[in-house]
Length: 299
Image 1: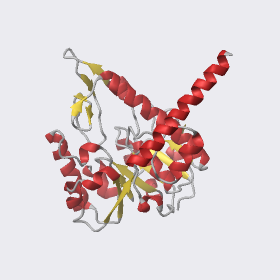
Image 2: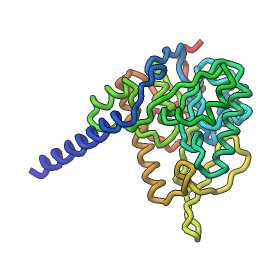
Image 3: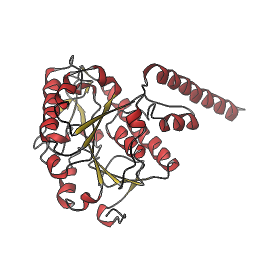
Image 4: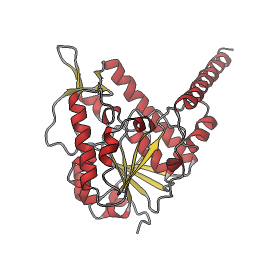
């Protein structure tokens, strides 16, 4: 009897998530024709995270990565590697990139990113950003100066619930697993591009061992990116508007790692393989692989 009650309770919890997700789709998801009808990638896709391990990866594999379609994320364009590897796709979704009512250093950082993209992109680039950013003009005015950049809006609506319900709405690009990390929409986009194999590099995700709380009860983390020569411990922020508490950080990290497992199951459903090339990565959802030993037919 107890097992039966547990199953009933579990079913109702999933049912509740399904209903909430349906309401969110109705309220927040927009028509995204460009994203829904993305042309199939001609090659397998390599997604470049911004973790510290990416420096060595790029140094060792400059020639081999040319055999893949590349996805770059967030502030990758501010690195020297941007014009060297010329990514095919670029994804930036953080609220602090397009909002104006954020801390001043976030506005400065986002202006630097968008101006760099506008000035240095001499090749065709598909740039993905959330539908919410569409009503904000600052970033659009900057990127609009470069005709090589095609802006494509994506729904970041978090979808949970029964598997058939999730997959049906994933397929229709109405939302995705909770996007608490930039790599979630990046992987989801690679799946929409129908890549047979998706590879991840620079996805260290090792913040847990870098977290600490100082004597002022500020939660600090050494969140180092590959393009930073030095980094200091700094506070996590929420959308560039306030700093967050430890339990909020741990919850966000938990949801992000959970989303990777949902993406793994969805990839299996789409008959796509996802390989994590990052040594010592904290992501436990995807098969590990050595890039030098992979031999896909990307000519």
